[in-house]
Image (cartoon, rainbow, N blue to C red; front, side, top):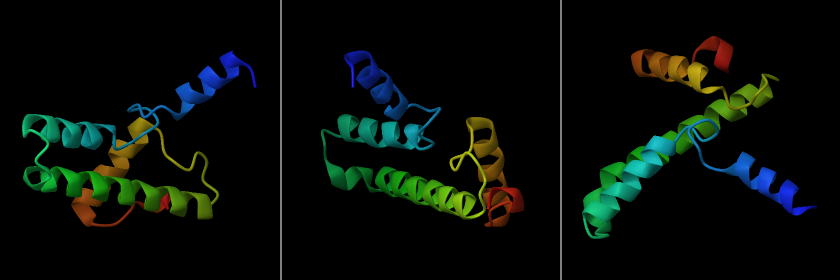
Length: 97
């Protein structure tokens, strides 16, 4: 693998909002730690939110994979629709699972 190929692979794996749905929650957790002098006890809510986010999108991805829906992780626009539906009903929309 050439250096350029390695760079492209790293770029694809980068945790950006486009390919990591919990980017905002991760940043909030890190900012909480920074703002509270790395006192983990003051950031439990941010950690719990990040953990829920990761578990939620892992579940969505697994269900989409089982249903042969590609891509397994929805695009950013579709993620908003899925999350809004989940917040209103507590369930995943039929087309996402």
